[in-house]
Length: 267
Image (tube, rainbow, N blue to C red; front, side, top):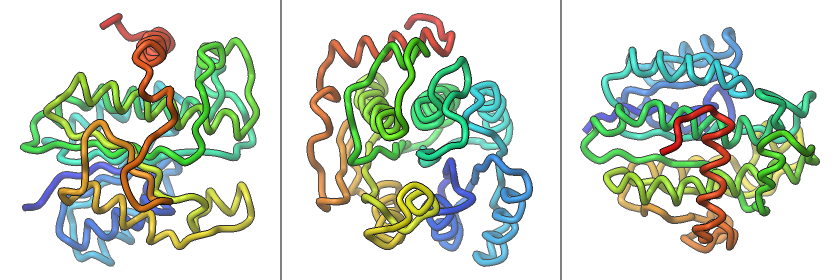
């Protein structure tokens, strides 16, 4: 059965490779990027390589939460449903450290943006027969500073990245409890895959990009996905995330501050 799939951060790296693989299978694939020219060329390339005309693109810079909200509306206008949402967009190295509301750019792009987008398009996910969300976590996870999330303190690059990935994982588990009809899995696709992000940050890679693409495909399209779970692709199976991901008090505090930062009504 052909599915409607939205993949953020899919104009390069494992997101683009996943989009191409799914397009070749005939699915309706929506890609996302922050550069208009690159997004247009990616859509054109995927259409040509897959011989699939059902490829569309959405433009948004995830460091700007207003652009995320605008994209969410466009997605809702242009997609009849979402069977699979892959929150793949992420950032490590950046020329600027702060983004929307003065919050560290990694916390915004890697956590606040997918949180805002996912909640905005949840009605489309609920229109699917068996919806699922795949959230890109990381082996790098460390306790989240709520002060940093509220832009009261600054963070170093790696610290902010690790906090953003734990925040995403904590939220994944929380959302899985609140939305039992949606399969929601967090995944470390593999450390230092052969992608632009790894080379920009570290100048090297440990594993081919295909390692990450394969697990994202399996979690998106097969029965390998388990809700409220963390798949560690460095170890090749499900495992334990950071202990904070199972701390209900810390999760409740994180979600409360997140909604406050985003200006969401208190649930």
